[in-house]
Length: 117
Image (cartoon, rainbow, N blue to C red; front, side, top):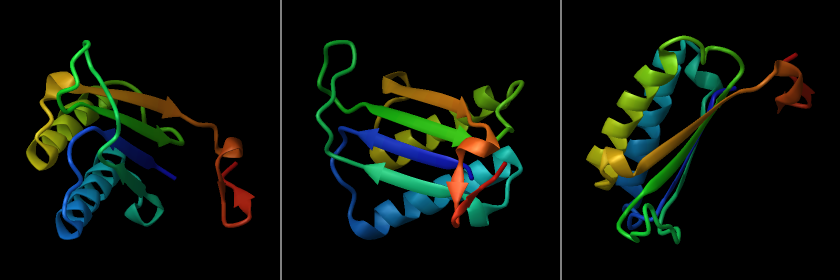
């Protein structure tokens, strides 16, 4: 049920490097949210047309959606971990990354012909 989507203006990674990033994002998200990784989905879109602060240098927008588990300091912890991973793998500085967190009710999250709520 957790989903992380990364949209970035950084150049596309070679397939093995992109796969490695997605796998690390999946494991990190599952661990920090306390959710089974078998439900985590990851997505990466590179070479997007973007600006940040009026500057076309590499930037990223990340969306993290989950049913619960986004309370307290967890989003702050996730922000640090995700920015670090993206800076390492994509070369996008943390100060050029926005992350949107969304706690979705289970009844509004479909999977396998049903919903989680």
